[in-house]
Length: 83
Image (cartoon, rainbow, N blue to C red):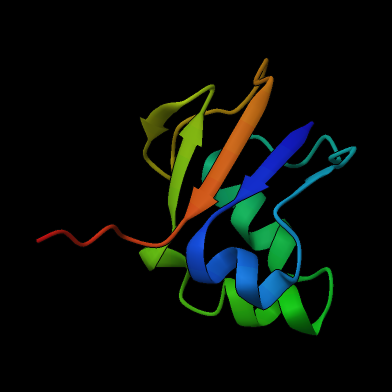
């Protein structure tokens, strides 16, 4: 699955995107965040506050409880601020 990281999530992980084979236990956006946070120190830092992470499946925002099955691309990013 293609994962795309934005803003400080990208900075903390050290890459903008990657392809990962996810285990079957990763069913929802929240499961994905929890799984990623266990991949190493940089991921742990990026997902330290999971409730702050926003998720987009195929460029549509989803809540953490929503399924990610069939996704071609998942974007993970911090809350957006504007001015």
